[in-house]
Image (cartoon, rainbow, N blue to C red; front, side, top):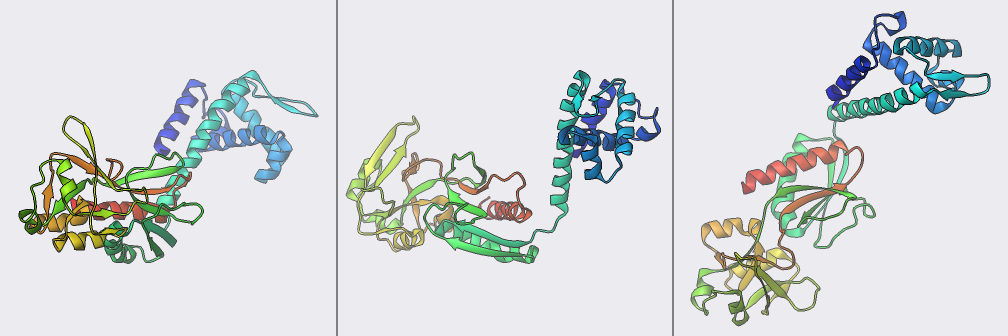
Length: 331
């Protein structure tokens, strides 16, 4: 960023035929840059005297520097009278370009400063309970050891939180959120898996299509949306919606996993939450030719945080750390 901004300055210098060696005051690009910043200050403040007070220079020094800048540009930039100051046509063109460049340089300097600053302070993190217990909480000891100046305040719930109202720095969510006021970073890909134990499947009717679930004890997640419906997409993207019923409903994913592992019934779980059970054969995937979901089919794990102009370093390093941790765990 800083290099691109500096290169653009040199391009403008060349385009405007500014000879930095022809004036003692403009002997280097840095001196020219300072003179240009002073010119922008004069325009924005509306007078030479106001710019002088802001910079700690005398009005005569400000006038002398602006005059040297005009000589290097090769044209008058300001019309000065005893009562007011106006941009010339050339001054308007010049101001419009260099003001953008100076703004970019300021942003580049801020970026470098953020990179060099030590992340510190309290970091408030909210997460869905299952993801929080399985991945966020286990990652925290290593994160805190690496960043000892950060104190983590971890909140776990299965409810959507308002980041601003509840002063949340980072929210770990399932499914992408389309909200332009928030920054969304994908941490891991995931999908919903319909599963049961081999013992349950051997003792019950086969499950070959989504409709067969109507004859099974389905362990369901409480969504507060009325009756529970599981949704399926086949390879042709044909949608099938199946009302399901069972002896257990819960808003806690771990409770459903425990029940499924015990052989109580069929569950629909995020694959990342039952990775070990699937690998060891404790649970078996059913209806593998279908994409499954409770509501939407984007079931990835995302970090969500407010869209500030400058993302705090404590947020940046946490999101980077949790992304690397989940990649190592899930592959």
